[in-house]
Amino acid sequence: MPAAAQQTFFLDEFAHKQFNDVNPDYSGTRIYFDSADFVARIQQYHDDGRELIGGYAPFCKHIFVPNFTGARLGSLAITQENRHLLRSAYSRRRPEELPVLSRHAPTLTAETCRLIVRPNRLTAPSQDVQPVPEAKFLNCILYSRDQLMKEYEAMPEKGDPADLPEAQDEDYETPMQPITIMRNSLGKAEGGSGVPLDKDTYEESAAFWDTHAAILVGQKPSGE
Image (cartoon, rainbow, N blue to C red; front, side):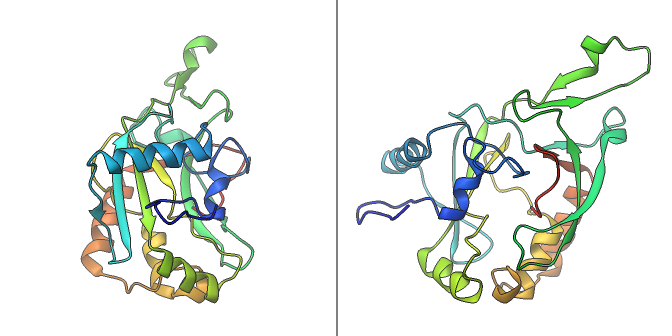
């Protein structure tokens, strides 16, 4: 939506796919909340003193706010109890991009947001399903308007999925997925931001995602 002059925040058109099942195949954090009210709440948190935190590049900022939407966690630690749930697939966020490999744990449905967990075959069906917990915080990842315009010029249909909230328990930035770092380093023409790959950042990302998996809501991953 267009940003008014007094607004610090706005939702890029591509970001609307995350709200209220606009795109049922979206595999990241789902937000069941009016999108205009969501932006207004984030703006109010900022007006009340919630600071913007620097991100992985000068054009990227974060604002961490309490999870007022009821959004479920977007990833979970891998354990012996849920390891058998892990799946992998190649997918892309939009037709112009190359497909990438991702690992995820599927939920039953977007409505229940539940994981199938079967520690043993004798477990009663009612105990087979565990709800994905609500996140404590929303990490709203923000790109500058100038950066978005540069990326639009390189890929007009792109939008930018990094302008989306992530539901998490930490009130600080957790590592982006290794493939996201790779895609960013490929440049704007391939759907990335153009930030060169930093080896230390990549190693930190690989270590985190070696022990965590994204929670998939929907029928298939969507390149996130």
